[in-house]
Amino acid sequence: MSGRKVLILGGTTEGAALATELVARQGERIDVISSFAGRIQGLRPPPGRIRIGGFGGAEGLAAYLTAERIDLLIDATHPFAAQMSRNAREAAARAGVPRLLFWRHPWPRHPLDRWIEVDSIDAAAQALVHLGPRVWLTVGASELAPFAAVPDRWYLVRLIEAKAPLPLPDCTVIEARGPFQLENERALIRHHRIDAIVSKASGGRATYAKIEAAREADLPVVMIRRPLPEPGDRVEDVAAAADWVAARL
Ligand code: NAP
Image 1 (cartoon, helix red, strand yellow):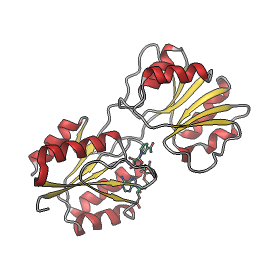
Image 2 (tube, rainbow, N blue to C red):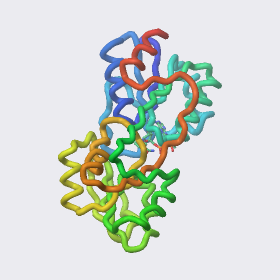
Image 3 (cartoon, helix red, strand yellow):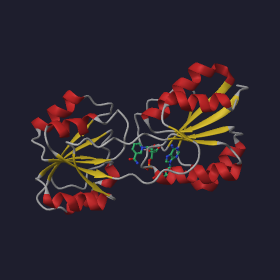
Image 4 (cartoon, rainbow, N blue to C red):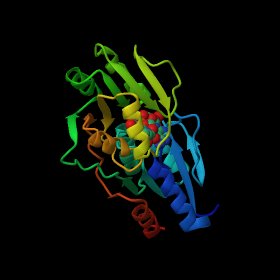
């Protein structure tokens, strides 16, 4: 492979879509490497090469960029992967590698949405005290513990993979991977007689159907606000990211 090297920090639908687009558009002219944290066993690898596991902070990533002679860095991590995004900004600056942030547009708030906006997982758990007992949690497996402290709650938890026993006394777990369709989300709300949903303000199409289904059912959604995005070049769609790469080849 003699082309220039692009490293995509992924773990998102958009990161995979971008790898697909770059390989399709540029072929042998670029070497696309997608990086994953390694939390998910059943990874669906996008086209190009993949690498798995942390780099060892911003310093480790900067060393990787230099050692691997990476030409361009694309941060296509999830809007809540704030640590990795910060590392990407610092490492790109240290190694002198141009960096692009793939910024998922936030979900707009519809007038009929009953959102209770909070700033953290802990605050989301506290907000449940005022809501009904049957709650659908759509947060990560590592973020469930604070919900155990809310008395008399039953939880529906949807995870890509449920590896370990969950820290919740009363819950039902569903393993599923997005994108999710509206009919599916309506059926879950009906079948499990959901009173409230907890969601991160992730944005994007893949998980928006639950927000629409909640609106239709007039359910409250405890919406955890995003961290602020890192500064620098940013785009909101795959085509624009591929154009940014093409302009620098
Ligand atoms: P994070 O807290 O920002 O990152 C923690 C550490 O995980 C980073 O410092 C880095 O370790 C490693 N890491 C994260 N993303 C990586 C990547 N793409 N390639 C290599 N190492 C990575 O991240 P997180 O919130 O745990 O998210 C982990 C992964 O899951 C990300 O790829 C993200 O896109 C994806 N994801 C996250 C969420 C979410 O809600 N947070 C939702 C869906 C998908 P080192 O410091 O050792 O390099």
